[in-house]
Length: 152
Image (tube, rainbow, N blue to C red; front, top):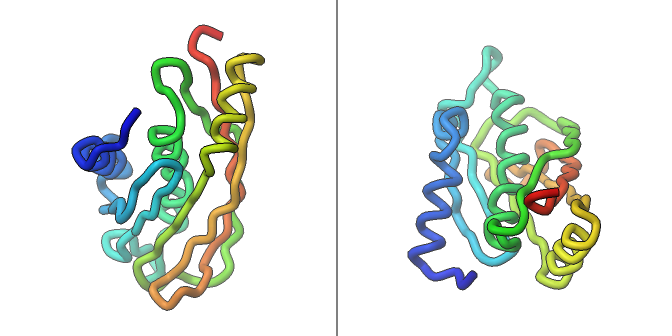
């Protein structure tokens, strides 16, 4: 799939609004390209009872790039993704907007797709660093996804 500006715009909108719980967070897709996404979670409306960013919002910000990477790296007519496992380690309170960036290079994506085609499924993973507006890491996640062949 060629990623035209129109397709990128539609994907950004879908990622930010396609799941009602995500839409309520106000998340924004700042950059999107083949195998790359940068997202921002605004501090408001994601403030908890002690005036820091709600842990569930941080988790959402770390999980959502999986959909973006899938949409820009794999053939959705042949495969679908699932989250196999995800863990989060909170390093410091988030008191500002928070961003996350994820990359999956084309060679690795092709290898994952080939394994999923051959075996019916293929695991892949990455680590996310969630950063506040000063660049401080507020949380780190380990994300494990599985690409599944449709019909397997």
